[in-house]
Length: 126
Image 1 (cartoon, rainbow, N blue to C red):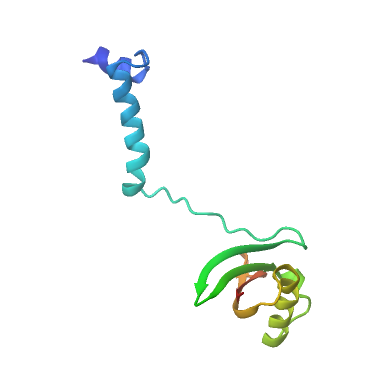
Image 2: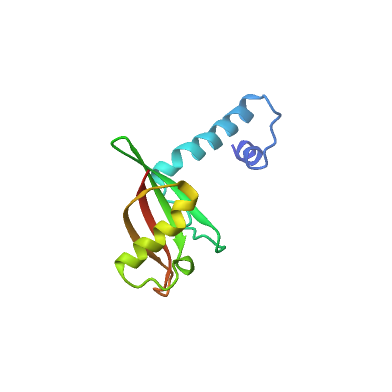
């Protein structure tokens, strides 16, 4: 029994043999079944556009016959917008050259770990 366990640990079987197939099957079962039972805490990293000219665009579904997109705009690109109307105008000023005429549905700030606004997520209908 110890010899069998030792040969599994050191992967001593030839490819195509019965024991090799058992090891490969066990590995595949672990890879595909374990995420359902083990929380690996892997989540996508929230990205913010790094360069001033970058705008991140993600598809956000549809509403009726219109397509909905989520644009992420750096706070630096917004200028000195302080009121809601100024922010909406600044967001449209950045988005419309990229995607044409759109209707701004809503927006929300994206904050860093210190609470500083680094970007804005804007949902638009096109």
